[in-house]
Length: 379
Ligand SMILES: Cc1cc2nc3c(=O)[nH]c(=O)nc-3n(C[C@H](O)[C@H](O)[C@H](O)COP(=O)(O)OP(=O)(O)OC[C@H]3O[C@@H](n4cnc5c(N)ncnc54)[C@H](O)[C@@H]3O)c2cc1C
View (cartoon, protein in one colour):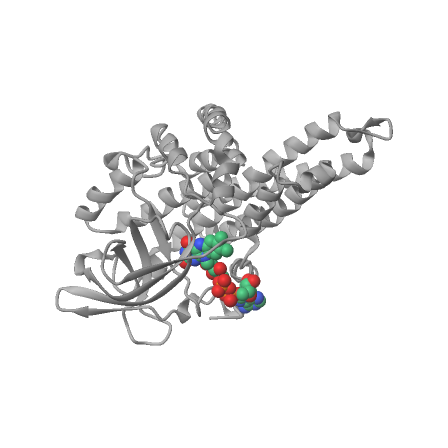
């Protein structure tokens, strides 16, 4: 069964200290100002976090998935948005490993240094859970792809230096989806701001592509094979995102326990009342169970086991659900003050809510493991 080794324990401690000292003090500022936290990204890059999962040859640390999970979870305790950025640079960055050597050697070292932000555009206004309904298209015209279409709800859209987008390269219904790398300064790209409930420092937006000319060599992987190629990327992203939510919730729970020890009501500390103790004990239990599930998922994804996709979906599902409940209860422990913007719980609640959106695709994946592919409600 899953257990952290000595080295991973040390990494956990050092990233905990780093994030608490360097990231926590500015977390609420980035959320309130909705600015992209470049200053924090620089700090994360200095300690090697932005290149954690990238190969050493491109300036990364080549860390295994569990180690990446530990790092991302610790960062999420102190700045949820920074953890989302780390997940993005390390996971989306790895998609470029399927690209040409020229693209890899030009952009991966920049991503590892935290100087290049890559966004991932899959969803569209009419294709979210049902990705195969996407309409964005790339047509080959002599030596270039001509891209037309819109990508919706793209994290980092407004600061990204480049986009990895999914586009249709075949006319056949629901098939023929390919992956393209598009630099954001290409003519014909229009980016619109989207204001989020949480994830406010992630420069969310919609990106329209109008006759955008992209070099033929910017195709990533084989034409028409994107969804298969990105299978593991999706698994990694799901399990790590579960841990981002849980990292934030873990911090909230620890703070609530400490507060319950000092806040006095009816002549004694709040924590002496079983109504509070039992609720926090249940939260602690479900939080630890969910964390273990996420780490187990990461370890199975690393081993490329057949059931890894089901574990990744379970990790994401339980991560989001548990985190939301735990943060909500932590907020309650603080009473009226918990609801105020003086404390971070309303920010935490808005941030972890993102992981509860669009759970249907996770349940479909888990259902596939339980019932078999022939029972899939949506092919
Ligand atoms: C904070 C945030 C960041 C995001 N960042 C990105 C990004 O960087 N790149 C990107 O491509 N996308 C991004 N997205 C978009 C995300 O991928 C979509 O929201 C998601 O795929 C769901 O699509 P949708 O919003 O169109 O919802 P829909 O597909 O319209 O679904 C609406 C609701 O119906 C439910 N549902 C769907 N199908 C079924 C079913 N068969 N049975 C029952 N219920 C169902 C869904 O769970 C959802 O609750 C982001 C979204 C959020 C909230």
